[in-house]
Image (cartoon, one colour):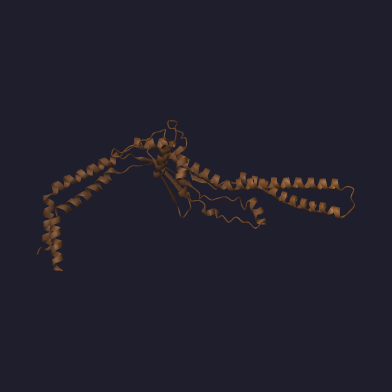
Length: 329
């Protein structure tokens, strides 16, 4: 039965007898890894930091809510749960809109074309280039949106509540423009979102106001026609329809006054409504630069290869030791 020292000595001899081959293969693996790592192009990154986004309800309910309340109708929409910054930034809809946008670099017709060119130009040798027919705009924008999403990250700081949007590419100005386009479209989305309800309220209130105005004019014409037709009558009974029309006129006037006021409030709300979107840090220079460390990666591969080969050449000894231990039990 082999002792522990005997086993260790056998392992040492097995490794020593193949040390030259082990070193050659380890160096070869490390060299290949260094070559591959050096082939990867560095990336420039930038970020923007924004305050938490929320929907501004302009300090209270909308003008239409007051009219709804008179009829027992309430709006129970939970506006705090409508949006999610990360989901919006990484959504296909917003990313496609961004990829369609016109960049400042006039060399490219769209941000998607710039992203694809940046990808193809700095592509490692073992990857295939993206081939896009520029006339196929749907495929062009979809591919650009995919590249945008793969180079954009959104992180939220739980303690401070700030949201950081980071973008990377092989071109510093491209990374900056990607980030700026994200902020721009994110702001546009919230503007559309928070003004949709005031616009709808304004339209509905305008219809109500116009309808009440028409009813008021019709009622006034009815009163005038009734007075003209009964000028010579002295009977009280003939005045009853007139009293009824006058009461109706007062009701319509009261509703019209409320609706007209609400209409003006709705117009003001539409003009004053805006999202709470405050940028703390704007994207721009200095850009961060990241590139894989070929020395570190090659050393790791060398160490792993060396260990695996040592194990391989001493496998029979290790297997014999395992079988002896199993035979004891």
